[in-house]
Length: 271
Ligand code: HPA
Image (cartoon, rainbow, N blue to C red; front, top):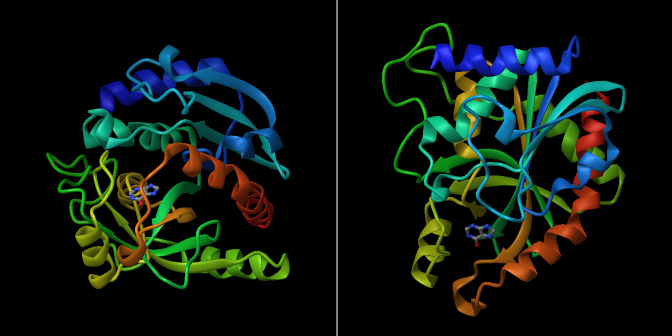
């Protein structure tokens, strides 16, 4: 992987000249609007970057956006990669390795997720305070390269405590309903059955989704502080489970997205 990483980083450094991103941002399903807030310096298609996997979803555009957000130099992944698309865990987390090698010091992640907690309603936001990985594989499986991180990375605090506290404060001051809770990662792409939603709640989940955890594991391996936030786009309450609709998910995400963008921008500006 080190050789591939070198190729991608060399290519990107040439493309972005002396731009040095401090903050990496991964934008989730229907949540690409933060890009509008970025004063863009360079935009690079995933497809043009050596060794970069390409998003197979038509609603996830695949490009790296380099620019300035609230005075901070950022690089945003517009379009993330999911395990259910058929990529390996190493492939979907490769971009995080690249961003780290380009110099980011923080990773911010967003996603769309289903609520499991009856007190967390569709359209609310949830800052992720911890997670449960039900994606039966770790992106760190295989020979460990100690230049990238330790063999057995600690996961006692995978989401940065100070950033969580700041994020909650920003939300409160802006009158935005924002919870904190446990995100459960499943592989998808099928949604959960009623029995599965019930199970995910029993084991301690507040929200469920098909992403984020692989990137967070790799970020922790790489020593990056992480902040992650979910937009709750549907309710996985077994007693009253509605059929899943992608249109509704995207609509809810679009509706909640300005609130999420506000929290992320303010948080990034405070770094
Ligand atoms: N389950 C899994 N992934 C999801 C959901 C869900 O209910 N909502 C959005 N992504």
